[in-house]
Length: 68
Image (cartoon, rainbow, N blue to C red; front, side, top):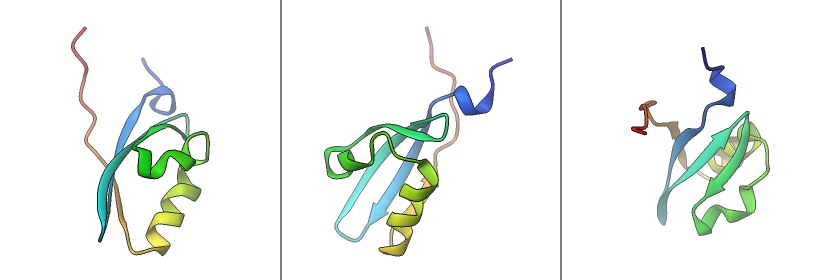
């Protein structure tokens, strides 16, 4: 069984001026759109709080199994 923290998760972020995605793994941001590039390597919760304080919606997308 795969530990849920070790799986990559895609997060949808929507602000009034931009909508984009970030990817997290193990509670850290591992990839992001250029507008959020500063968040790579940072804690997912602190990044979510940052965006929410600025009026953004921050939602995990449903998990999907990737075809190999």
